[in-house]
Every structure is written in C-alpha cells, then in structure tokens.
Length: 116
Image (cartoon, rainbow, N blue to C red; front, top):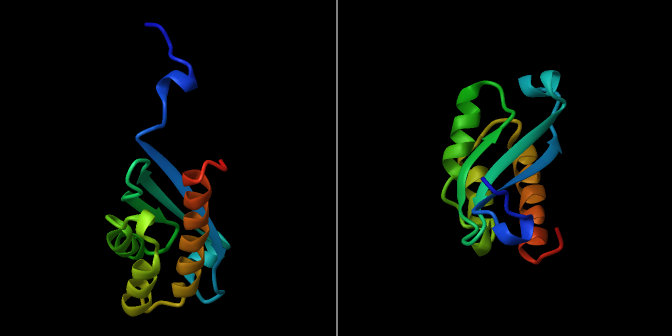
C-alpha cells in the first residue's frame, strides 16, 4: 500500500483540541493532577464536538461534562456551553472547566483560521 503525503490526504475529518486550567485545592482531581485537562474531538468541517473528556474525579463528573459538550458546534461559539456548565455543574471545579474549555476553543479558532 502506498502512503499518501499530508498534502494529498487533505484536512483530517476530526481534530483533537486540549485545554488546561488550574484546579481549586478542594477538588480530588487537584491532588492527583494539579490541573484539569479537557479534550475535545471535533469534526474539522463543522466544528461539532463528537466526544469530550476531562480529568475530573469521580468519573461521573467527566461523563456529565462530556454530555454537556458533545454536540456543541464550536463554529457557533461557546457561550451556550459556558452557560450550561455554569447552570448545571455545581462543583468547585466549575471555573476550571470553563477556563479549560476556553483554552480548547482558542485552539479551535487558531486551527480554523489556519494558524496551526
């Protein structure tokens, strides 16, 4: 099988965006990781989040945040996702999750504009 060059392959169908933020000391994840990592697998063409995960303890928190973020269209911005996290995630890591989401979104904007 002949391998195609990066230019021949074109734009990938999905990309992985990761954002990090410092966690508050009263969270279990802070003692394990120190920071939160939020990973978003995003369709390149549409900006739609197809899967999401984060380094929150317990796993239910990760699943909850993933449920909020899956389906979000980054091309439409993240204001509605931030509002939903603010309204529904009532744990001490709320601000860190939002900060990590904003960092990942900044990576999306750079990628989408061709800077990365």
